[in-house]
Amino acid sequence: MLTENKKVILLLLLFVALIGVISCSKEDPPVEKSELQKRIDEYNQSDKGLKDYYTPDEYFYMGVAIPSSFVDNTAKVNLMKRHFNSITAENDMKWSSLQPVEGTFNYVNADKIVSFAEANEMKIRGHCLCWHNQVPSWVFRDGDATASKELVLQRLRTHITTVMTHFKGKVYAWDVVNEAIDDGSSVYRSSQWYNICGEDFILEAFRAAREADPDAKLFYNDYTAIDATKSTKIYNLLVKLKAEDLVDGIGLQGHWTVSYPADNLITNAFNKYVSLGIELQITELDVSVYTSGSEAEKDYTTAVAQQQTAAYERYFLAFRNFKENVTGVTFWGVADDHTWLDNFPVAGRKNYPLLFDENLNPKQAYFEIIDF
Ligand code: G3I
Image 1 (spheres, helix red, strand yellow):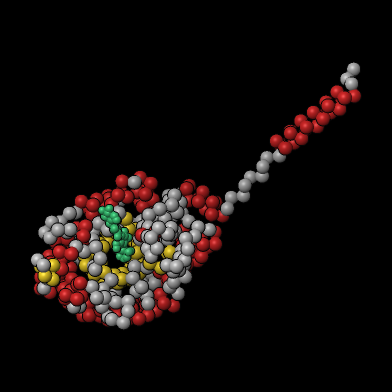
Image 2 (image 1 turned 180 degrees about the horizontal axis):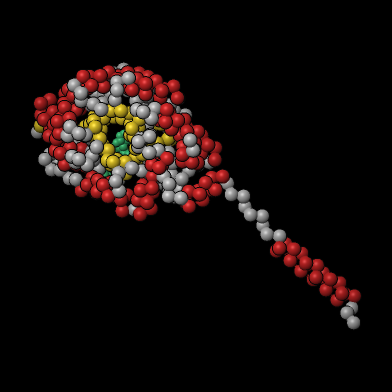
């Protein structure tokens, strides 16, 4: 016969076992997937990309700027092939890369990007032929002296003619001159180009470009090109270039933030440029999660994501509203794992300015701009 104690212990054991069975059977309720995760699951089941939602005939080319090393990175290649039909070299087509020493041209990295683009039927934007940055000092030197205007202009013509001839029929559009307009009270930036040659370097650059490849579309490219004052200075320059039929479009870089620029600034500037009958391209789009250089580093929280998503939606609504005039939108980078904004304006401050996160997954902003 079971003693009382043994009965109690048995009952206890049965009770514990019962509890165990009940708790095991009660599956943890499935974790409710976030809306974003559900969209990402759908995205992973599809092969549709940005260039399918924004086709060039109805909207504009979808572009991306890359270093040549990216064409050897399978994950990045797959993402680029899915979403983009236009490529820009982030640095490999700049003067310091192509002609580091006078008369010696090095196209290795640039040609790598061109071959990748051609193999994947992507357009190629050339960036950039004449800029105050990433240009070797020899361009402005004549021995120990500063080179004369004639010598500098001759070197400019030689560089443009040689480079455009090399990429003729491959590069469909060039940023001929980049960032020549002053941000302050002057009209032109006091660069070595301007200080030695005056505004003639701009006109000479476009004349050489038009002559070197008459089929290429020629752009003047700048940042803050939507600013009321700066856009007027750019407009006046474009009028001068148009007078000689030397320019086909304005490249608005688009290094914007979650709060700048306001819609009216974009609309007013776009209308100003459209009135000249030229193309508009957004050539270096990224949307910084910081609005100033004094902001401390922050994580990419849901709140930050929502702020950025709202900004991207505003910007793409503006691009769609001007779809008759905007012929290309290029992102200045593929994903948040590689962006110049991690070191500008604050060195080492992590930024998240693009549509794909550091793991190349689409962010909320991506899904927002494809829903229209
Ligand atoms: O190639 C050298 C490498 O040999 C050296 O080891 C390394 C060490 O610092 O520097 C490398 O050069 C860097 C170059 O990018 C290539 O990675 C330069 O330091 C660095 O300053 C340069 O930054 C580029 C910047 O233009 C130069 O002004 C950025 O990647 C590029 O995104 C940025 O792009 C510009 C556009 O052309 C024009 N509009 C603004 C935009 C952002 O600044």
